[in-house]
Image (cartoon, rainbow, N blue to C red; front, side, top):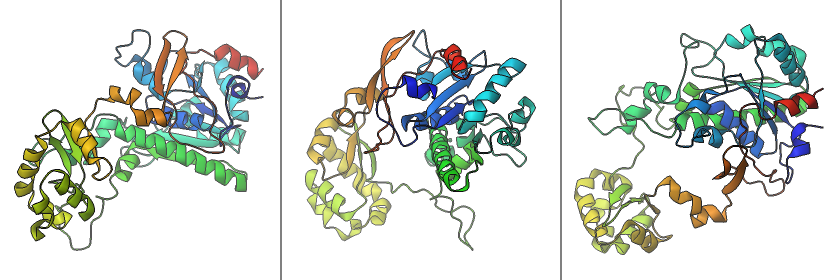
Length: 384
């Protein structure tokens, strides 16, 4: 019986019975595996003796890395030194019964460690083998280390984020890594579905470069005859954006005529709603220098939270909040997105629970990320 099925409480998930070996580090691969764990998969995080580098990242928690805890929920922890013959043999025994293996080694490294796709699929033809790289497995940059903000900068995300005429700006929050993690989970699930028909596993390739460009698909359109430098910014500008209020800031979206008219009515600017100069989102963007000062003068009458309540469901908006406000936000609580986790060294902590809802197979209860090698002994015993 799989180790997790004996130890994890709660309902079955759509991936219950699937065993995932997570040899990856940092965010993209590990969080992709946590998304699989959310869906009921048994995920074994296999780390080298020094541990995942994310454990060493700066953290105001003395005993643990906040980032590691958030990225590695619902996994069993094991330490193996793949350079040692005995530990390599343990991994091979795990691979024989595994359904999925995920790693983020650079191209060529897995083969040197004896865990390349050809090597492991010969041992287990049903294995779904997912490699997460910076730039892919081919081309001149294949051996280069890839990191979220490096790829943001390379692919134009930072240039587009920056203000016109200003320097490029980083999008903090590891957005490329987290999007790549969703591609990991989706790609692995698709390969498992296909395996049910063919009986064979396959290689699934995810790269940060591919993730960064996927996120910009709406910008990556170059029509025949167009010059190189054209307007690719998808932001509607002007009215739609973040605006100051009497206290705090609020984001407003007024792209449709319905929402524009509601915004004008709520802010006492009804005369603007019927003005033909502003009767489309393009026109409002063109005349933003006329509209924005009038809107901001009206918004100065109330706080961001007061405007949020006033606009209600009639104008898409949100008062700017700190992430800490999400722990007890009534909508987040209603959706059961935050749970309490028990940790061997940290005690209890609150954190995110699961990314997807499944009505009939909701999946087992999430649990805390493991301390380094926490379940090594029990996992070795479970495979004899």
